[in-house]
Length: 285
Image 1 (spheres, helix red, strand yellow):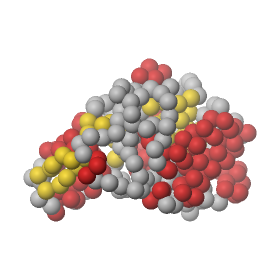
Image 2 (image 1 turned 90 degrees about the horizontal axis):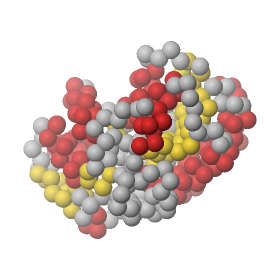
Image 3 (image 1 turned 90 degrees about the vertical axis):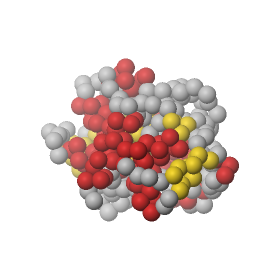
């Protein structure tokens, strides 16, 4: 089986690359140099050259605040490119797995969000990702979409790595304590994706995936502090005290029942996965 991964240099793409070393599938990892998703007209021809059996689309414009101004680039990567990919994959009987985000929700829920929950993005990033979801399923009804949240990894830039750097430099940090969700260790998500692809059943539709648990960013920072052995004082602050160009959902805890029951996937507790990632990061230094 030939698998093509876009966004190979990102967190999820990097974790998939790591897993591929022990996989019997034929993998091709692409980023902008190998497959320029900004060049919409030439995407089909480039996909013709690779002609994969499965496409895992990890590529995205993820700079949430910058997306408020860079709307065109965000729309191309998060919406228009996946629209073209979905059309090609459907035409060529290629399986497509597209990665999306909890930011398609407005954050006003008080219970974990299922795949059927009403979407209502409150920033440009979320809007473009939702457009991408819609076009993906319209152009390829056989596609699988996985929404995830608060992704971190030992690869690329993320909250965990940022906190670990800051905790080495600063005595005090102010971290938001009123945004609730659950982190996702990209290595765990990569493993779930590989299990879906390797399974004998392909059931199209939207699925949710994050690690188990319910925490705030403040809680997350405290866990990083404890597991990393840092001494930094961490103070919880409300969102209103840390204004950003893009609004964030206040509650985006994902209900993972569907993916667990459909593909018999066991999802680790967030703190167990965080401990694994921090050990990797500390050993790299």
